[in-house]
Image: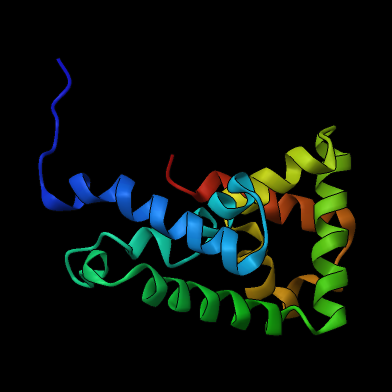
Length: 146
C-alpha cells in the first residue's frame, strides 16, 4: 500500500502550481505546457516547497518575480554568443552521436541540467573535440544519482 503524505506543503502544492502556471501564462504570453516547463525547469522549483524557505506562503506574483529574476539572470549568461554557440554545438553533437533527435536530446539536457554543466565547464570543454565533449556529457550523466 502506498503511504500518503498529509503535510501542508503537499496539500497546497497543486493549488500553488496552478496559480503560478496561470501567472506565467499571463505574464509570458505562453500556453499551459510551456508555462509548466518554465516553472519545472527552474532552479527555483525544487526549493518552492522547502521547509527552509516556506515560499508556499508567498503570493503567486511574489513567486513569479523570484522565478523571473532567475530566468532573467540565466538569459544574461547566454548573451555571450560563444557560450550559446557551444551549448548548441554540444546538444547537436550529443544528439548525433547518440542517434537521438535534437528534441529528445534537449529534453535530456533540460531534465539533467546538462546546460548548467556545460556552462560551468565552458573554459575546459569549448576547445575540445566533439567526441571529447560527448564523452564528458556521458560521464556527467553516469555520475548523476538515479
